[in-house]
Length: 126
Image 1: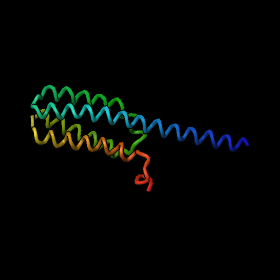
Image 2: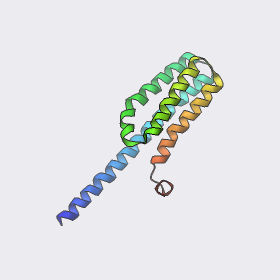
Image 3: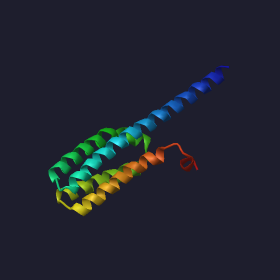
Image 4: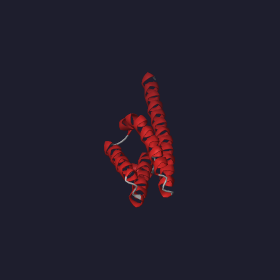
């Protein structure tokens, strides 16, 4: 009976941890995507100072949460986001509209991809 109780407790902890990490990743990806959306809008209207401010806020949000993401996610995904943020920063600094918009879309796709790969679906299991 003690073994069964121990197994149930372990399963509850694993499921609870999995749900908590999924919720955390979901809320962080939504926040980051919303921030990148405002960067995209600022670039579209050629408000470069606003775009730089919004990108800096997005980078701070990313840096603040990156430590936990490295525990939960593949490091290659994190490196890709870091690289894309640096490219976007340079494109905004040089005021390149097409490159900035393209990199913003790529960055949003990378962030969204993380959430999709961490979802509990049959596609991700098999």
